[in-house]
Length: 328
Image 1 (tube, helix red, strand yellow):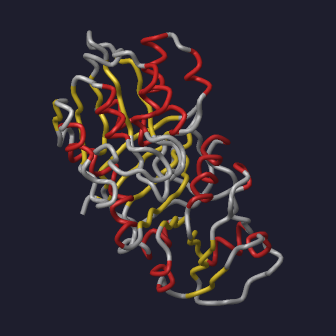
Image 2: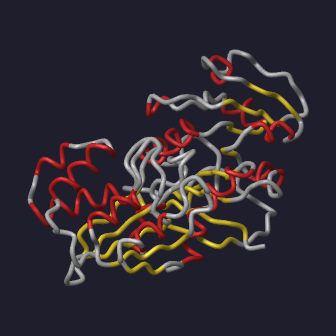
């Protein structure tokens, strides 16, 4: 389950409006056959991605590697598995979905493949998709739930939050000496990840001073994605309208001295430094820090006394990426 969690966190912030989910498949002799995650809404769920890889390792049937949609993979597995999943255990961070939507039911697929045992972390609170555990149990497959439940619930929190109201995370990049100013800080891969997150978020919040100094565009060009609406938090509405963010198609730019507009959005990124951190403490659910192995700059989060609980740590070729929540 820890392997499934670590894989799923790589795609946190990218799956909206779906949850981030991870899945590990373990063979008859305890060998790990696959570790996969749900990567983007509309694409195969974590269980399907993992079953695809596990099936190939068990059968050497290369055709399945050419299949990309959930429906294609489901059909191929059901028609060709020949009992290869007998004795196999599946670990998934979230109860397998029971309904047929953009993708077929993962619970139904698992029940028909006749796996040995299913381990589940979090229960699905979405009434439309819940009930997967019962479908699997009805096929005489053993199900153990609430495995690493606290950790799986932390992974699932953004989904459960935006289903009810809104999910807000505060993102920043800093150097080893804590500075957040003076040009590009994070790696190209990290910046591409942020652009992919912008592509699926509803609203991006930034401070007025950052707009005036940095003159940003705040789009998703590195992934050829959709640029979110922007809230500029500022007491003054005076800005140089030649700044790039004002010239992005199909974008709304709101200038306000408060966060009231957030109630109209579901998935929200706040980007900024120390002042924005303090202003948004009461509304930010999670924090995302990109720590770059360099020094320089002048401005840091001076005068802020906070402790965080680390939810997950990732590392790309250069940066350390931390998802956290405030230790209140």
